[in-house]
Length: 169
Image (cartoon, rainbow, N blue to C red):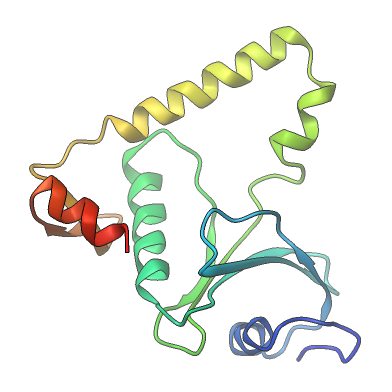
């Protein structure tokens, strides 16, 4: 259950109560900027010391959570890219949510200033290799991911312009 001292949005509180009814939450912190303002992400610190990241679909559209879960599972199986471990997810709840374990204790951005030029070069090469691996995945036709898992993605196919226009709304 959520402590009274924690100030979190009602949707975040509802998702945490659903996902972790028995765990004591110590603190809910911002997770950093999001590229999609229809999602909200927070870092959750538990009393047992094992943090997680919670992402909710603030607009109640569980389709984004479904897609993200499918992509994490698929990329983790088919690419040489490290993906977060999914702790739990719920796509039909109110709100829909995805919970992942931290991938590392400190983000690359926080470590950047401390890295030597040689290490920066190595890290940038690793990032480039990961991006190349993900973008090298080929599909038979233009599509939008609507579900799936490690075995395959469920795609809504169409012309490039139809897919692009449908996603820009």
